[in-house]
Length: 164
Image (tube, rainbow, N blue to C red; front, side, top):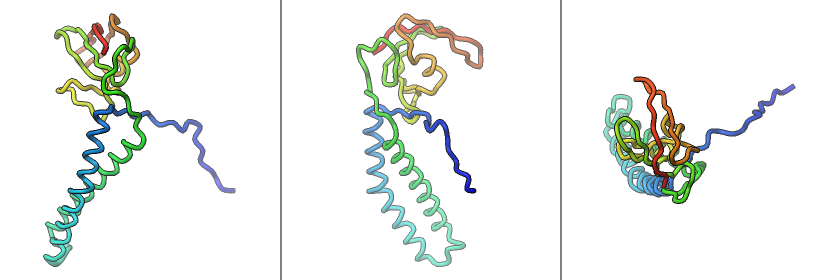
């Protein structure tokens, strides 16, 4: 009797990407496939001509670079294939969603963040992931709501001032 694996919950965590992030990912994918991949192939071919591959550092480096490149291409391909594209900035939303630009007020003053998918997160640029603790705490909240967030130094409170 053959055992069959079946999973009751086929869902995976949903990945999100903004329209801006989608465009950047598409551009990077084209650049990697059209420019970087042929460049690495030339490096590998040149390294092969140097002789013994078992002791050829150039060949090993080029193959490592190729492996990283192919992994990145696969990552971008899957992201573009499976991620849900959300508007870069939404207006008129009453509640915070992925793609919302949110202004909050806390102990350190006002800050504005855009809620993005994990792959676009860049806190220094004001982009936080929907999966981050702050991103999760903001999702579904409305202007005027106060949220409490546990951080390593204790609890912090933020008030949502504006959602765009």
